[in-house]
Each structure stands twice: as C-alpha cells, then as structure tokens.
Image 1 (cartoon, helix red, strand yellow):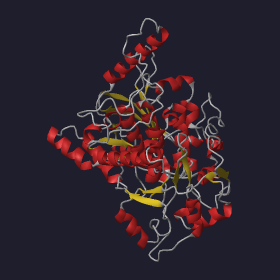
Image 2 (cartoon, rainbow, N blue to C red):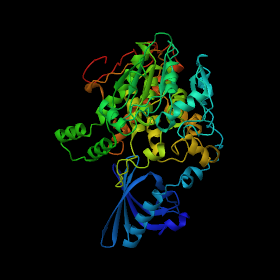
Image 3 (cartoon, rainbow, N blue to C red):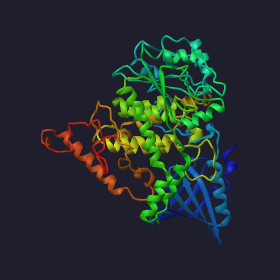
Image 4 (cartoon, helix red, strand yellow):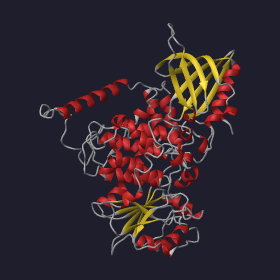
Length: 552
C-alpha cells in the first residue's frame, strides 16, 4: 500500500481552524502520510506563515463532516480528547480531506506507522531500549529465585518476554507443563520482590480448570515452591466471584482450595470502556447544570473504577506489607487488570518505583514486557464510532490512580502530572516505538527496537527531564497508603478537562513553585524557615484530603 493512494487532496487554501479556548486561525491545510499541517497566512513585509497545527493523524479517533452550500466543516475528535474544527471552502475538498484523514488514521499495519519513519537528528535508534533489562531487576532478588529463558523463542507463551523470574527449585520442564494449564501459557512468574520482608508478588492468567475441574500437579508444585514451611499465600482474582464461576463453564476458572490448600482466594472486578466514554461525554458538555454534571459524573462510574483499582492494589500491598504473605494476582488473560494491580501495588509499596527512572522501569517491566496489548487496547479512545471489544483504557486507569497518589502524597512522587499526560498521549499516538504492538514477540517480528526510537531516550534528555520532575519531591521510604473514600478521590481535571478550560494559571503557579524551590536549594541558609523547603517527607497516609482526613 502507498500512502499517496489514500490522499485525495493534499493541500487546501483558506481553511479556518477552531478549537476551544483559542481564537480561529485561517491558513493553508496540508495532509501528508502521517500529519495534518495548517500554516497561518503570512503577514505583510514578506513574513512567513506560522505552523499553527501539527497533528499526527494516528491521533484522530473520529472524523465528523457537515456540508452547507459551498462550505464544509470537519470536526476532528482526537484520542488525547482534543476536539478540532476545520472549515474548508469547497464541498469536494472537504469530503476529500475527511475521507483521506479517516483512511490514514485507520492504517492498522504497525510497520506503516509514524515511528518507523521518524528520524530526529539528535537521537540514535539504539538509545533507550536497554535501560531497564529484567536481568538488572533480577540482581536485587535472593538466590531462591532464578532467571529462566524457557520462553526465548516465544513458543511457551506468546505474550511473555523471553526471560522470566521463577522459583529456583522449579525446573523448566515443570514450567512447560504448568504453562499448558494456564490461559495463553501465562504460568505464574515473579512480578515484585518486597525487599523489606522477602515476600513476593506473582502474576499469571487463569487456570484452565473447566467444568470438569481439571488439575495440574506441575502448576500446584510451582505455587507451592513459593511458600516456605507453613506459610500461606493469597490469590487475588481481579474478576468478581460470579465472573470467575462463569469462566469455568468456558474452560477457565480459579484455583480450587482442595488443590491449593495454602492459598486463599480474594475476588474483585468491574467493566471499564463504557465508563470512559460516558465520562468524556459529560466533560465535553459545558451546558450542564451543577446537578446534571454531578449526576453524569456519578453515572459514568469512572471514579468507582479508580476506587476499585486502588482498593485492590492496597489489598495486595497489605497482604505483603502487613500480613507478610506472598500473593498471586490474576484475572482471565492476565494482561489487563492483573498488570494494573501489580503495578499500582509496587508504586504504593516501593519508593524506588516512585522515582522517575524507577517508574519508567516499572512501566517497561510490568506493562510493556509483561504483555499488555497496547495495540488492541489503545486502537481507539472515547470518540470513535467503531466499537470493538478489544479496546479498554486500562493503562489510562493506571495513570489516573497514580495521579490520585501524587495528589494525596505531593512530596512522594519524583515525577509530575506532565509525565502522566505525556504517557497517556504516547500510548494512543506516538512518534516513538515504545508502546507499539501487543507483546515482545510482536516487537521482535516488527523489529521495533531496531527501526524505531525509544520514548525513554527522548524523555531522559536533560532538557525534557526537568520538565517532568516534581519540584516538591523528597525521598519517602514509607509505604504510602492512599485513602479511597469518595471524598478523597477527585476527577483528574488536568487530563479530562485539559482542552475545555485553560491551565494557564495552574501552569504559572507550578512555575512559581519551581522558582521558589530552586531558590531555596541555591540559598539553604537564608531559607530555613520557608515552608516550601521541606525536610520532612509525606507521612504514610495522605496529607491533603478533600472533605475528610480519613486514613483509609
């Protein structure tokens, strides 16, 4: 396929661009293989026009068109929730631009996407891809565990990376048979080692118990090897008990107590995609009264999902920190809510995961290499008219939960909200290859690490790095236990309302905080009494709770 075949009209003059909060701009619209560009009309004295719009077409979620006489209007609804309107003179030009944009935004071939064509002069292709190898994480763990390369050719599990961490007493033959007993071959592997007390968190997919209650001695042996002596563990099933029961009738299920007597089951779970769509619809309707807005916000149930995710992650963290018990987390496939819980629990438990580099390593280990299907889940956002079962904003929910943690513990996260927004944008449409494909196997087949740039390479450049640092950060070795009371959770306005209301004053406030903190660091003796130059980290419970001081 050639991109030129999809572009019916490449250039249109006198196009007016409108977007909320900004005055309309008229200029020349150009469409390329991967971008929509609009340059404002040049002024007098030979001045050049300014590029006012540089939109990655992959970011377009829905295209809506309206024709009136000789003027056409195209509304572009983007995956990052931005809404743009283009008024185009000429009916044919309008229809051509709309159909070209729809066709280009729907190209599904990974190797035709922009990261394979993006070549910035300041970066090298190899940079950033080997920053967070699993081998480095393995070096922090005791000799009771080993690094297995059983999946080196991806034949055991197509969604696992080539290497996984497993109990040292379990050989690869046992792993191979255990994999056959788990959906998609996702046998239990180590997700997190809690250095404080030596407990571990495992993750997997559901066991293939089925209606005939099948069993697997190798799977039982693998889980028994995790526990020492008379220890007991917890299995956190991210599905409801009813959903797990229904899954058994379809060949799946959950671990029976008779076969896993030392493991106790706990159930959680609720659906998500429709909630995201309802929330965005409510946020975009600026005509709502207060009562109607609150009703729609509640009706979307998005904050209920946030509460459920944080509650389950806290449950996992509590089992490890307070009960000093090992845990296994799984849902059905083990690639969505499982990773949401394991990753969130680590942010709560581990101060290293709350640093900028540690957080990047966590995303690499627990989301990207662990097999979250980004290509499927982020194919569409909240506006698309095409509805597929594979889309779900699981990773966005994770980012929202991390934002809630940052709001309740403003000194404990080294990174700021801007980093979370950048990650949200790049999971849906990016010039970097980090979030491409559904698994490490697919990335190898597409040669993503050889032919595209890493997002981490760009983010870790000094000029970019400082933009994403929290000026209030102080290392906090404590576990941070968030409050999940309704009064404690807030709508993430910086994301859901970012294109609806201006963030100018908030940006100015953060710039002033940055200036004050920097001046304190430059002159510590003179600023000993200033409150922004804090010496005490966040407590183990949140400092800033709206409405209550519940410790959760």
